[in-house]
Image 1 (spheres, rainbow, N blue to C red):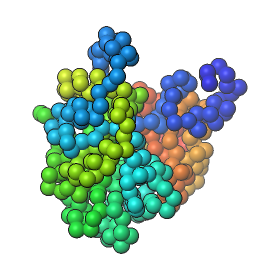
Image 2 (cartoon, one colour; image 1 turned 60 degrees about the horizontal axis):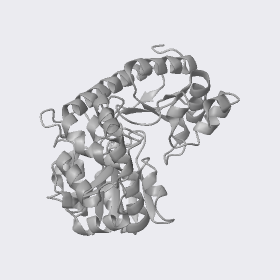
Image 3 (cartoon, rainbow, N blue to C red; image 1 turned 90 degrees about the vertical axis):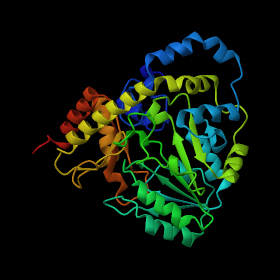
Length: 377
């Protein structure tokens, strides 16, 4: 629907709030979707342009080559990798086809639950107001329910809170004798504060990728859309030493599940490792400044973020999340994410704000001040 077809901003908001993408066609500032604005560099698009005929006219490669390309990027063996059309494809296969019973701490990314058949997904409620994962209680709950798959998203979405690596290792150890695969979704791990600047890989202090040899009962999931800024290319992968799980997931993906543009991106990505690290550093700087500015609002509870977005609880008095989201869009043409659809107490009081550029973040803070009241009062 072209922007000119809207009668007013209310009609436009109603349409946008029901969509899952294509936002760039509708002329507003997107603080809802979570991606790196500073990557990929323009040279990547030039490469696509120079090869556009070959990329459009020819079949892309299949899973064996794709796994080798990702393996080169993350320094892992291709036989331990499955590449998906975004992590969403892999989640759909695992939740919808493989898992008998899947457990996930909530609030979290809804797709793990949404993709599961009715009655197959169990939600483990994170305790508010901290929303920290107690891995000992979580492990006990997993064992009690007899789940064959458990999921931890770290940093979590929407809370932006990371689970410490020692806690994840303890969780893997607790589940090792219980026939339960632990999925660790690291889609936002590149925005945690301690990446390894020398190698261009995520630091061993944060990612669990270096633990797959020690713990065959874990699988790492990663959407590349967030950190690499390529939502339209749709690339995700899983990494595990569990050969039975790899085989089961590969049976669920079709032979050409990744298009030629995504394949080419994987081929050239190692050449842009330094640019990627710098882009993530800039995202973190913008994120930290946004967190600081939001923390100045009286009555607004702002959670210190480990991802590229900020999770907030609105004051009890004043607009709730859906009301604030609508008002920001209608009056300021800015779109954030309210958390009314998440599983947690008082969900309608929470919002999630994606960090954009310094200027855009400042404009958002000013717009919030016009609705919630000035900061520092």
